[in-house]
Image 1 (cartoon, rainbow, N blue to C red):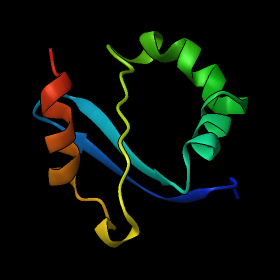
Image 2: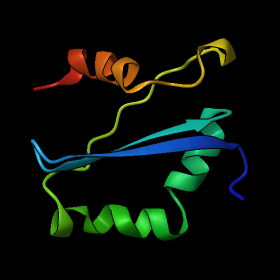
Image 3: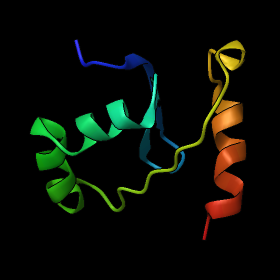
Length: 82
């Protein structure tokens, strides 16, 4: 029901004990409207009480690149990992 929301996928790694989320939005404005309001904004202030990190990364894709795969997401992370 969130305007501009297209879809999501969740994953959890028992190897590193991390949860991960991929979300797809029609545009950055829709994504930011969700991120900065309601329950999500509240959750962001509490992330360190339930986890180690709350880092995010975003990038633009064309409709013909959907659905986004975890391999594609991992490739986007390589340049930003510590």
